[in-house]
Length: 630
Image (cartoon, rainbow, N blue to C red):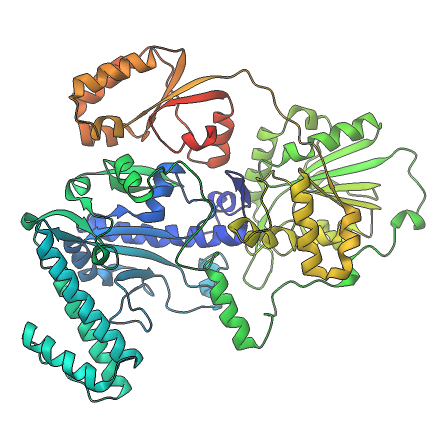
């Protein structure tokens, strides 16, 4: 645990204009861990599963999590799910498969694989799970066959609805015992069952579980030979919605997802279109749970605690500047400024300020501050190998204008500069890691007159209407370094307004004028690059058309040779193409594209974005590259 790759993944970043803080990254990495264990069981026992719902959309449109979403959804055909349940004891210790039969208030037909059944602040657990105490799960939606005879299907759906209404009415006491007994008798006569209850709470619960089980058995009655489609019968099938032709789930292809891959239909474009229609049209919303999901668990803890949790950060007026070190020292003959860069991809935010300080003739020092992982109690874990890797990467991505001013972290003596520019909002508040404590802003206030916090990323503008952007804003604004800064620089007027409003809410409306005076905008520097065209060849071009392979290949030949362009493939793993099309057909595609420069794109979002910035436009088939050009 605590590898360099994890440290990189867990850092704050902006994707598609949306800010993703470490707290959400913690949830992501835990879900990927659960999926990895599910996948291991499935591979061992030849169990097939597919990405589903939001994860299907994320897989095809983003190549990873939707930035403003935080869950993982997969689906299995009924027989595969039953096989998975039969081998659930092979999941790691502590894992549990939740459903209506074993979990309170789980009255629906989605299974949840959890890595723990409760919130845990156990030290050993936190060490193993990046200090993330909350319950995390992967949802499994179950696909059942739909009768091709739609009248027969409607009758089955009607029977299921009747049974579920009876179960819910008995359990929730919304149905009189007399009515329930009457319906239960008719149901026993129809299905040859002998259900009964004595009116006690335990009996009501047990009968509800039995009735849900009966409904689930009815969901399995249509055989593959009697069906033409599959669906999640609860709830969509019961409403005659979201039927998918069973042929869509005939073959799987693995598509890249974050640092792994997830199987989906070889007709992934068609499937995603059925679920989300014009799926490249972005809508920042979420359904079905609080965002981020762990906020509801945190609120439960607050209710039990009778108020804010002890580890939660709160505003104190003493954090604001009270004195200036220059009043107690000799003034510098030459203005001295220090830039403290923290985290990858944050150099550009400082470029404007660096040039301004150079014009002023300031003496400039630039230092890259590494992150160190933290123990659950906040103790910093100093790891020389992680330090070396971070500093090596920082030098490799450092823009040329910073190099002449750069000084390695271990050679940096902060001294008493006139101004310090920072870009990390957390100080010690990041839930996973910390910058070196000697650079926390409380200490900087004692040695410099000006702490300038520069928002390290440019996010898309948004209004104050309820949205994921507004929800996540407090995760990177209501933090010590922003509060203690003498200036807070953001890239747009909209974000200036959002920062002022959020800081005033957090610190109290009486502080509004203070924030209005210190929050300002800056103009990010734009890099001008000579750009060319890119063409994406997607597997769906060959799996979803009625035309012959030869005709589709001829169309591809025409498409890519109408223009000067580079070529990329989605998915990028050749073996996935061969698995679906065969070696001969893949070789034919490669011959058609042989005179084009083939480009492979990084799985890492920030690296991929830098690669894509060099292209003026994208042509061809849908892929996670498309959104960059919309």
